[in-house]
Length: 274
Image (cartoon, rainbow, N blue to C red):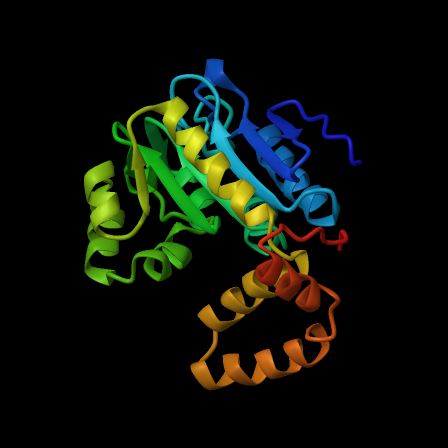
């Protein structure tokens, strides 16, 4: 089994193949500094390659999910110094690295459930829009805060949030104003699909759903996530054509007869690791 030893992210894996990824800078309200960005990226890249993991639940430790960007450690304060071309080239690499951390979640072959409690600012919204499923506590709120820091959000919210919500008017309002969207509104607009009473209930529900998903065929799971992501970014015709190619190979799996047998006998199937 892969060893997960990171400074700002805690990872545990249970016997059902459910991994808990916990943002773990509680004294800094889980705000993202360079170390946490790198840890999130490396965590999800490792999880992608770990065949003992089937599903992931990501949450935050302490008072809130995340305060967003750690403004006490950001490079934004030093922008504009030195040669403009060299500074721009350096900024480009910094932004791409931040983007890669959350794209690693989206590209992870395992379904990822975000469990959000209390506040989810800025980079937190970027992170959870890259997840497959989003739940929150009733006291949770979400804020695309970058507009109030003087920049356009640049690590995923402007690209993924419109596709998650599907309401461009609401997305633009949230991104232009930087206002808070509370749990009730988030549920109504489809940003989250479950609201729980408190943190303990939230984690319990996320883990229950994760264990259900983990019981499914790993071949079916990886294919379903991959094809959903592909189809989101392509036309219906392109998505259908790509699915033909994908399933032409994947239908040869041993998991199909095992799944049929489990359905008929009413006994859970035991699947091989990927």
